Amino acid sequence: MSADDWVSCPICIYKRKNSFKLLKDKYGKISQEEYEDLKKELNEEHEDDEDVGGSTPVRIDREYGLSDKGYVYLSFSAVCQKCGASWQHNGEKILPLDKDDAAIVKEMMKQC
Ligand SMILES: [Zn+2]
Image (cartoon, rainbow, N blue to C red; front, side, top):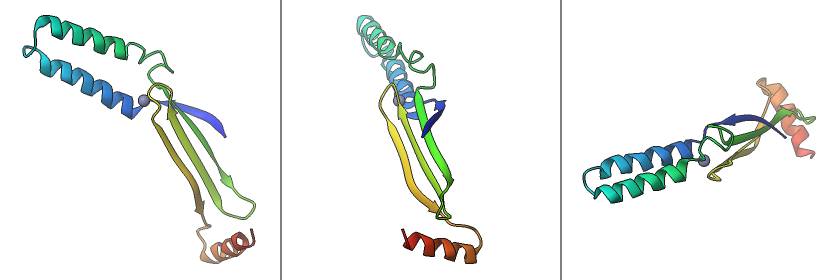
């Protein structure tokens, strides 16, 4: 398996947007000091957003191919280096499109 790609983390983006939305919503509803403290806290919380893989902290690993038993295998995993969110998809077996070939592959898979 190899790391082919780095992409933005949808979880981090959501959290960042939500944090600053909270700050915006608090404007005028809390004291100036509380507002500045919250702003400072959020800026510190998100200051390293650009440091972990730039703005693309999610490492994607994938492997796919045609097995010697005649099916396509797919393995996909992604982990955010910043927040730890992870995704995984494994074990998909895709048979040949032709139904006669697919029947042969199913027979070979039974012999595993
Ligand atoms: Zn993340």
